[in-house]
Image (cartoon, rainbow, N blue to C red):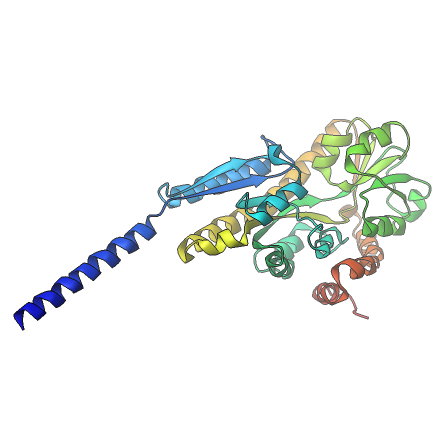
Length: 339
């Protein structure tokens, strides 16, 4: 009986030490994650953001989780999407590619929101667009971590600062080669020409077009400050990127690590709402200082709402790509009548 008791005790202690050691080993398992962003090298808000996330998570885990940080040297945003989809890169800050799933064309929908207060509610953590993105991301093998607001867009022009369809008549502008853009810039009175972004400076300087749409104050300052005389801040759409992680990699992490990563990224995307608005205002100021005339449609709220309602009619173009079911959800959320 005594030998049996000792045997049980030994087995119990052995199990305790084995389980205890295994649990400790798992808790202290070191992890290295590869994180990247596309388009903008340092210095930029994008590199600052992924570096801040890497630093904070490393700090809160006492160095257990480390990051290898990459910028746009890895490739363009479509290539980065593919790398995260495959798991070659664990985590990214990037526009979402519609190559895998055409529903991501919804990021080009005009006037889902018209200002930053709305954007925070709609695209911020728990917002209805953020929730939609979270559902779609899983279908491209990604875990959605948060929506990065790049900023509101407008149009740069050479002829005049057109804010009405009458003013815009005869003005030819570059738009991204996307049907929804072509549709709503026609609604605003312009003559759109679908030209890739890389060809914008040449198209303006040679007179093929009079200006360009598809970017905000930062993009216009970077691209076209010496090519155009006016910038009209139509606020026609808000450019959004995604913080995502390869879904298989996400599932391989324990619950505590997933919770920490989500918390840090959510904090970062909320800071970006204010940061994006500040950046827009900063570059509007830089455009003015460079000699461009800047007109903000928000200064004429009636015209802004007219433009919003006119352009939302072009959501029918997105019904074909995104699916009417999804677009109707968005219509309901923003108070547009569903037909």
